[in-house]
Image: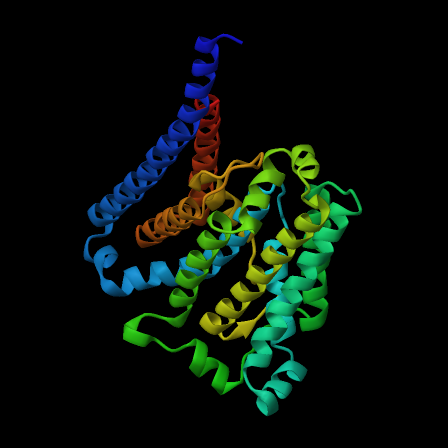
Length: 335
């Protein structure tokens, strides 16, 4: 190989990460601009109702629970998978954690029983998904679709299609508190975002997630236990679903089989809009945060202007298509 070709090759290998980094910065700036534009539209159409501190806290509160699920979904999609059962897992976790038996145990042991039960149910569902996909060789779409139907059905059986009221006062006091006027669930969301960013970008677990999603065979040849790592990813997403169920129970003070309806769409949409590739190998927690805020703000603006949920669904569908098209263009430019 000639000296010039070696130099050219070296220049290419050093320029590619810089180009990828520049595209990432441009993508995040685009998300910031989109959020600012939505806020301007809200100010113009709803005025003080949109700009009030109560409305801003409402947006953050609504973004918190689905945001925690979206952070978990970011890991699964970055690792090359997908999960359609997150909403059903949230429902099952909330129902199981609010049964009479669980609340009776919480009265004698402490409200933490409700929290651990919800997260435990979420992890169990995630493990089943991961095992079916990694070792059962079932396509993620089919495996998680089966979990969607099963978890929602089991939640209906346990709750007898009734809403279960949270009666544990200690749980309501702890999770319903508002330090500095901000609900506890917003703080929980902030902590999950920071931990998720650190786990994905600063740990071996995160680097393995990128490797598995980018090229499974290459990751296996590099010594990564791909199947085990896949199980870990789905268990992690299940844990975030359980935590989201706790946050939802603290906000509504109920456990219900109808909790989390269509959350799979909202979570996947927020992740895709944020810049995580559906094909895997590239993911960003920061982008997911902006994606969640954009979707929640959009819903809030529609609600303040008395637009129907049907119009909201159409708008979300259009945004998802535009985001995927932009992803394809950015992916082509980065290669």
